[in-house]
Amino acid sequence: MVSWDKFNTIALWMLKVGYLNLIWILFTSIGAVVFGFFPATGAMFSIVRKWVKQERDFRIFPAFWKIYKKEFFKLNGYAVLFTIVGYVLFYDLTFLQINSGKLSFLFPVLVLILIAYVITLLFFFPVYIHFDLKFFQYIKQAFLIAVTSPIETLSIALSFAALYFIVTLIPGIIPLFTGSVLTFVITWISNRAFKRIEIRKGIS
Image (cartoon, rainbow, N blue to C red):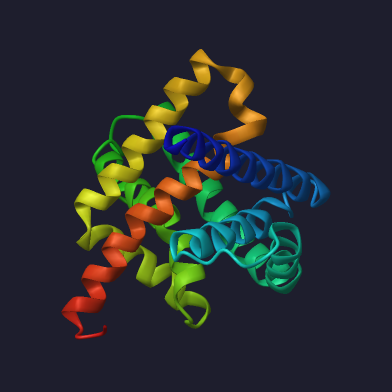
């Protein structure tokens, strides 16, 4: 009986996680991907954060839609910012590879900037959902937390690598679990970093 209850619990959570992933894909598509990805991802992180905090008494779709609608323009502002910076970094790396020689000394510097960009992006959504900050403070805090939490940062990076490996083996899971499972892992790991910071500051 106990094992059957556990099976039902696991099956229910798989349905919830799969349902959330499908909603995320739907709302990303509604925004033509470019304008839908950041708001949909922010909404997905918001739902997962509720689950991690043991909040159960809410309906997934209305809660998702509420965050998506509320944060649509603000999160798209970040989408534009991250896209521009990412494009500039990609262009600069390509330029240095083509024009190596006298400018080769800039390559390590650019790689460091690229790493800073990636780790900031890894922590951006958890920071955005967890804290109430001003526009550029979200980016600053995401970077600082990533730098001061190397174990968590490495864990998130390894989670991406592991999921990529699994997807190459079982591509059929992409529409069902990929985004929501990764969000769950990132939220859980980042919360460890947040709690440590709060303890340091004496916040219960």
